[in-house]
Length: 528
Image (cartoon, rainbow, N blue to C red; front, side, top):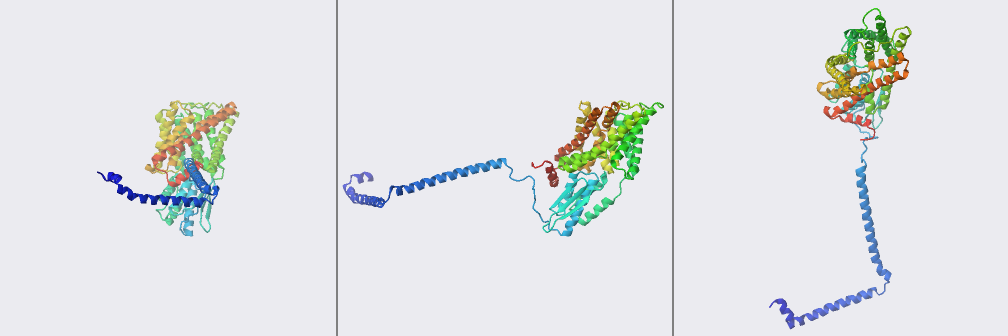
């Protein structure tokens, strides 16, 4: 028998449990009486109050939970949509460099003189600003602020006691690519080179003489004009006449420049000389049989390209894209003004020729279009000529020669495929900019020099002459203005193509430096 069965059937076990059960029942009855007695003097409201408080607390907890959940959802949505950090620090705090006052003054002087020299020798404002910031950072100055306009440069180093500010005026702007290359090397060596040595090296760069005599520059400009004559369809005799005409223009303008003639009138005078030679060639056809050997339009176009080569079209476009609208507007106005000088010079001489009875049928080229190979050779000669005229170093001249040949070939290819003049110029300039910036570091040359020399064969000299000839011959100002706008479109296409080529080549050349990225962000406005 199991223990359970024995307990249930045993009378003794049942009688033993009875007192215990009775005690438990009595205790429960006593607790019930005490509860009734304690609530007998209270109202129903006082009895229900704890229950109501409990309910209110539960509702509050529920509302708080829902509010917290809504706030969490809003925070998540804000993180998805909003940018938590500004792309550009609007007002950065002053960061002390820990340098002495005299050292900071020397760094400011070095950076300011480098920037002024770069702008004067042909660099864009974006490149000059980047160089100045790099120099300051290399020597420990962390709060350097730079502002470059078309005619002046100001730089400030912020300090806790008082800022240091200096201003320099850009008095001269003339392409000098040998000095520009030396300045670029100095910027690269900043930080490694002690500060006193850097200042001494800058003095040496600014005091050095040109690598070529002025007579060599004149010959280079003549060779450049001869290359243009070949490129636009002239023969060997046209190239020789273009060479001689450009030499005469350069020596005349140099003489007038030394006597203070403004550059606008220098451009007009140079274009007038080239057009005057063309009128002489037309009149000489009555006595000599050189009409087909020396097309007058080729001579004029060659002279115009030489005059256009010195204008800062690429620099204006680069400054505009990089976020320097004031300087870009000033450069653009300068380009337009000096191009207008060329147009005025051509127009005056053409009008004079018509009044004295010289027939103005000088727009037709006298020889068939040269083959591709000859056009590429002409492009190489043009680029090499301008590189020498701008005092480029020998390595840069070799690179520019090759890029100029490829630019002429690319433009010819685009035209043969049916593209228009503006589109062909843009694609060729895009190729030049990409190639120059992708290979500049490996070849040890400045990309800006290679690009400017490389697009020189593509300058719209003949297009400008066609526009002025049409306006004078037919007295149709609107048609001439339309052709002139087309020539301006070619110039803008060249500048835009070079700048876009630089942007596309940046990932291949290497990641841009921190200071270059800072300058590039300015061109994108407030969007990061």
